[in-house]
Structures are given as C-alpha cells and as structure tokens.
Image (cartoon, rainbow, N blue to C red; front, side, top):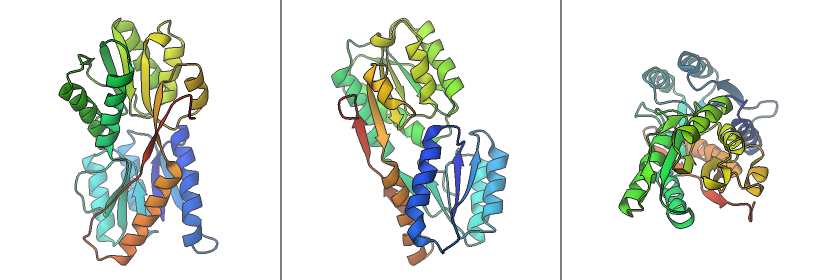
Length: 276
C-alpha cells in the first residue's frame, strides 16, 4: 500500500497517517508497512513523481492532491500498470481511479451554514477560507455553504473565498486581512488546513468574541480554542473511521472487477466546548 498526503507539518495529516498505519496493520504481511510520501500543496511535479515511483512498488495507492492535469495524468499511468488508485478527502476529475473516500462535502457545507443561521448573531459579512480552489472537497463545501444561506435568505453576505494554502502562516495572514478589511465581519467558515493560523489571528484580534469561527478538524490545541471562545464549532473528521474506510475500499477493489467506482463516506461530528 502506498499513501500520498500533504505535509506532515500540519497536525491533521500526521494524525491521519498514524490512524492509517493502525487500521492497515492486520492486513499487511509481517515486516511490511504503508509506504508514505508527503508533499506541499503546490508541489505538483513532486506529487506526480511520487505517484509514478510508488506505482512501481505497490498495487494499492491512496492520495490527497489538488485536481491538476499533471496529477491526473500520473494517476492514469499508474492505473495502466494495474494499480488501484483512490482519492482521500478530495476527489479528482475522472482519470481512471478506483474510488473516493471522505466526507459528504455537501452535507458538511450545509451543516456549517445551518450553524451560522441558527447560532450566530445578527447577519453580517461571512469570510470563507479554503486551502486552494483546486481542492474539490473544499469547493463543494463552499458552494453548499453559500447555497444554504441563499436558500434560507439569512441576510448574510458571503465574501469571496481566500486561500490558506493548507498552512498555518498563510492561514494567519488571510484571517488578519479579513478582520482588518471588513469591520462588519461576523463569521468565518474555514473548511481547510492551516486552521491553527486562523485561530491565532483571531486570538490576536480585539474582535475575537465578535466573530463566530466554524472550521473543519481535528486541529492542534482545539480544546483550548473551544474553551477560550476563539473557536465556536468544529466539524471534526472521525480519523479512525476514515482510515478504516480507506482500507475497506482497498479490500472491496481487490475483490471486485476493475471498472467499478467505489465511494465510501466517513461521518463527522459537531464539536463544541461542551462536548469535546
């Protein structure tokens, strides 16, 4: 088994890699393990090269990557070698891959919007932070979030999304700019990586208690952010369940005829300071 994830510097992927190792252990031959590769969000050529290299050594490959033509081409080449390729968390445009494992992103985005409608204060401006426009999962979350608020005519004005590039430093910078440029900002929705930077920027702002933060997680020091009121609601992936679904998809693909696309969804939890 080969797995390609984003940088281990972001706590989400480090935790997820350990969950995958735990779930895969009973099915691997003694002395073998998952072969991991980690890459930056925009390291497109590096990611494509990792797909090519791993496809020469494994028969099952799972990856998280942007929907980019070079990456899709690498996936197509891996499939021609007989490798079953799966996308995790964010799907790719059709490229012969065997399946997708992750959240129902439409539900996640609409759930975040429901929380804004029901739990935030008077309507104001809403900031949306995504990792990158080519993360199809986050694109779906954003579209569904907007759709819900429009459907129920909540009166909120959703701003154009800004990018965190899935890292803490950029997350901090774009959040600070949102706060500085939009005095009427009342909500931030962050279905992205680098949320620790979003939290830190809000902490450093005098408007921390005026802005509702809804993010995806888990993230480092989430409990403290919930307790001190910087973070209001976390839509948390169940990482052990997600990892188990990845291994389940690989088992299904091993038994099924090629050509069958496998979609397995993993649930999420709404976390507040009262139920962390």
